[in-house]
Amino acid sequence: MIDKKPFENLIEELEDSGKYRVFNDILRERGEFPNAIWYGKYAIKSIVNWCSNDYLGMGQNKVVIDAMHTALDQTGAGSGGTRNIAGTSHYHVALEHELAKLHSKESALMFTSAYVANEWTLVSLKRIIPDIVYLSDSKNHASLIQGIRHSGAEKHIFPHNDLEALEQLLRDVKGTPCIVFESVYSMDGYVSKLPEICALAEKYNAVTYLDEVHAVGLYGETGAGYADQVGCLNKIDILNGTLGKAFGVQGGYITGNSTVIDAIRSVASGFIFTTSTSPIICAGALASVKWVKDHNDLRIKHQEQASKLKDMLKEVNIPVLENETHIVPVMVGDAKLCKKMSDMLLDDYNIYCQPINFPTVAVGTERLRFAPTPLHTDAMLHDLVDSLRKVFKRCSVQT
Image 1 (cartoon, rainbow, N blue to C red):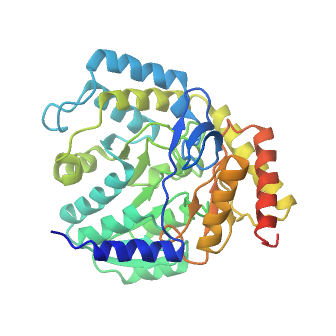
Image 2: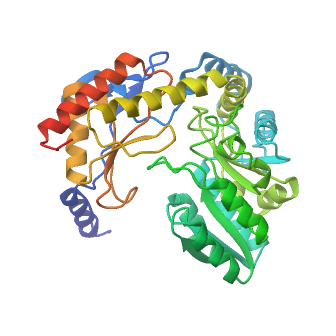
């Protein structure tokens, strides 16, 4: 029988440090986003969700929901197998074709999540290119870190966006260099120096692997991502994206050269040996990608609301981290205080924003990460800022 003591010790340690994660029980209501129902310990009530990654509210879009209903009636619930054995539906094929077209690439491959796509693509690249050497940005997501670690390849980490340090690594590397980085870094909202990094990759003949999870659907005139917006899409060898954020559904994918994608498809265990995503999900994602591509007005409104919220927070001296993206981090700097402020917002002001603590961010940089959408009204913005101001005051935090 397993000894529970080590597990109890871990939970106690997390609770004492303020790093224990509480999963809030919420129910999204169709057509009401960003409003939701919170099932609290002592109350059930309506709240406003301020931390969802459904950045454009596409999870509530009628076109997406109708497409999923149609697929459910047509195909039934599940995929029926792995992609290799009976689990590749026409919806998978159509979605991958649409994703390749979105990013102006030859081919795309869908995974069960962008995390899985990152991990197993990086593992697979090591098998295909035995002398690959990963050069990884210090602020990269856990899935990129895990994929590099799992691959067993040689790796070097360069300080975030430090071009000088990256070039020094490229000069010294023995083997095939692969630069692994993100376009939009999800916790700070910073963007990568994409044109400069791509120029270095070209100079030193390095592979470029770009995570666009927090950019696809949101940047570029058709939502192809930040690389497209800054004119570097053709410089990216492998691009990772998600269907679970701007597109509002679920799943992840990679795009690139057809031979490269085919080889990864053939060896990536995390793709091969798992039941494929339901055709219902694929149908919804396909409808969402097509709709988002044609509605740049939604992207414009999204950026407007994010910019407006940042300006309003700065006006009342609430410490918002400066960046040029849609992410609005309000800095707290203490794990227990961050959790307390999150609880106060939810309990007293019907505002839901999950506290962001270690290991998602470094100790001392704890924050409340707000994600305004086109569906957050100006009245909601004003209510949030007023509530935050009161919470900061009640916690005796100077602003």
